Figure 1 (cartoon, rainbow, N blue to C red):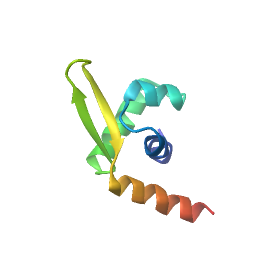
Figure 2 (cartoon, rainbow, N blue to C red):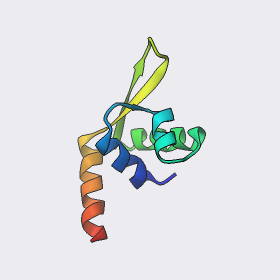
Figure 3 (tube, rainbow, N blue to C red):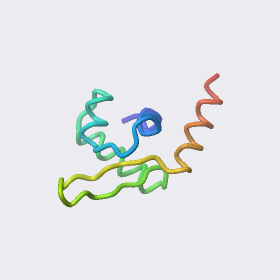
Amino acid sequence: MDKVALLRYLAQVPDAPASEVADALAASLPATGMGLLRLCRSGLVSRAFDVTQGVYYYSITPKGRARVQYLSSRAG
C-alpha cells in the first residue's frame, strides 16, 4: 500500500473509515488497514473509534500534511 496515496487521500477527505479509503484507492481492506495503522504509529494519521458504528475513522495530522507537502514539492 502506497503511503503517499493514503496521505493524499486523507488530506482531501477528513474522517474516512478504512473501507472508504480502500474503495477509493482500489485496494484491499487488509492492505489499507495495515497501511493506515503504520501511518498512525508514525504520527502521520490519527484515528478515532466510533462506538455506535464500530469503525475507526482516520484523519491526517499536521505532521502528515507537512509530509505530503514535502513529497509534493520534491516531485516537481
